[in-house]
Amino acid sequence: MGLLEPLWISEAAWQALRDQVIVPELTAGGEQDVRELLETWNAPQREADRVGVFIDGAHARTLARLLDAHPALAAELLG
Image (cartoon, rainbow, N blue to C red; front, side, top):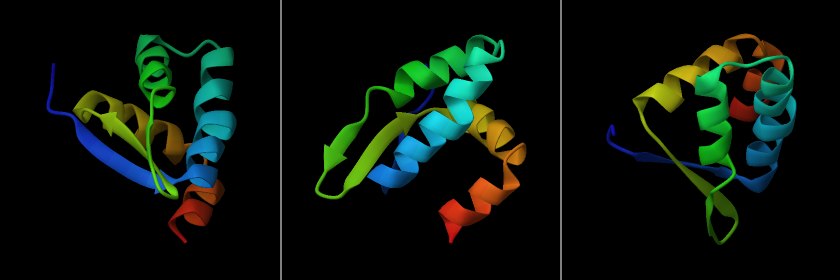
């Protein structure tokens, strides 16, 4: 198991990534890495108005790959 790092984001961003990026990819026949990312994504920690998802390097690479296919959403989340 790799080192887990927290990814702290807003509840809205967490939901958008889950509903608009991760779940559709899994529904379209996503591979094991997407399934594992979703399992991790569905077990967040909540702190005040933030959601923390603890991801490792493999999850981060999968998320980055998925976001590359959604540049408009990625830009919106960043900014």
